[in-house]
Image (cartoon, rainbow, N blue to C red; front, side, top):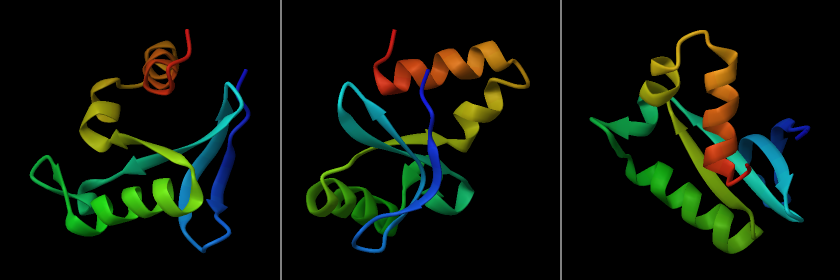
Amino acid sequence: DLVPKEEKVTQKGYSIDALVEVNGKKVGVEVDGPSHFIGRKPTGSTILKRRQVANVEGIALVSVPYWEWDELGQDLSKKQNYLRSLLGIR
């Protein structure tokens, strides 16, 4: 199973909600609340952070939009399956 490092600060000072290793590659997981979006589109600062973390840090980022997470309710199995799918894990 994955063991995430929560609230990770990268070498360049970017804060990432969780960092996991998938198939030998670092993947950052960002839990994006309403302040990261205008409607359902990411804000400019959110897009910039994603690009910089990927290009400067070499860490792929995946986003968990708040409305998708909220739709899963309290079902832990659905949440685990959602995260596994997002990270490309079967």
